[in-house]
Image (cartoon, rainbow, N blue to C red; front, side, top):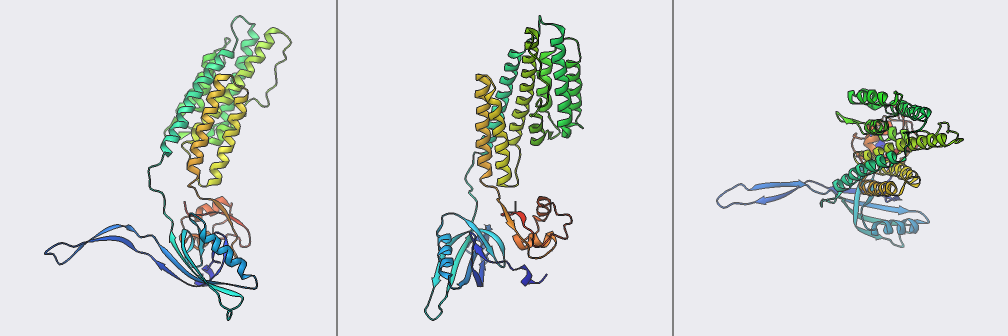
Amino acid sequence: MSWRDKLQPASFRGVAFNVSGSDLNAGRRTARHDYPQRDLPYVEDMGRKAREYQIDGHIVGPDYMTGRDALIEACEQAGPGELVHPYHGRVNVVCVAISVRESSADGGMCTITMAFTEAGEVSYPTSLAKTQQATDAAAESALATAKASFLDRVSIPGLPAFVAEGFNSVGASALSAAQSSLPSLGPLAEFQTGLTAMQAAVSGQAADVSGFSDGIAGLVNIDADGVSASFSELVNLADFGSDMQSVPTTTSSRQHQAANQAAQIAYVRQVSAIAAARTTASIDSDSYEEAIAMLATIADLLDELAEAADDDLYRELQTLRAAVVSDLSTRAADLSRVLSHTPQSTMPALAVAWSLYGNIDNADDIVDRNAVRHPGFVPGGEALQILSEVS
């Protein structure tokens, strides 16, 4: 691929312009120390210097003034923006100066000189760890309250045997759902041990209410050898009972059975959602959109469950929801955005990554994100989803 093929249409904050030349100022930041009676100084390396870009360009056409005004407005906006540099790809910069020259002799165009400096990152201490810890603490408290609420709602002693049988039948369904919904935990010995213990709790003639509550909560919260259930697996389990046949409430005993079944279904959904909320604190999303989508999913789920909960559990679920929103919103703010890019021709993923970022670090992400069949042939003329910057 020749250098002309690698050139990209220039723009800043989405405002296009033509480039006639550019300069790049880069290097290292240093502090020189001179000592008495020594011929050679000591140069202390202070890190990489912020790259500075100076671009000479122009906007041409009968409506060039519209493009000129849009570019001036883009440069006067506060904060960093994305510069698509024809030679250096996409960079996050701050426009520090723009100069526009027009003349009657050169009607229908303006020449532009712009200076950009590489945008850095805030290096002050952040509260990210605290927001993640708050999510974990809120999940632990909500789980304890969900258990207490469940135990208060279940009625077994003094009722006919079919009530206990119904309880165990729902427990067996929950066990099966956990086994099928959490495949990532299958290889873990702790998960298999939990399945065996819960199987014993729901297979006897009597109803082991505590065994059921501890068993299902233990299964969804297993974290061993760095492996835990995924967010999507837990959200899937939180749909438990949606297709379960309701119990006819024809007698007082049947009403107790129906109430027990509703309590069991609600409890499985609650502990699954609480565990899913807890996992969000340990998930590092690839993009802003991915984090916000996860946030919307868990917030809606917690809202739905809170509406049917008692007062104590309602408050705990809302506290957990607030903690998740705070954590994910804070961490999502610094993530890359998903943008659309259409290659002009079919080329390897490595070439696409190089043309976009000036390196090949995100080649695999381009392939995976767009389900490209072969990394050597990224289709041209088709819109791709790409990250605004290399993760």
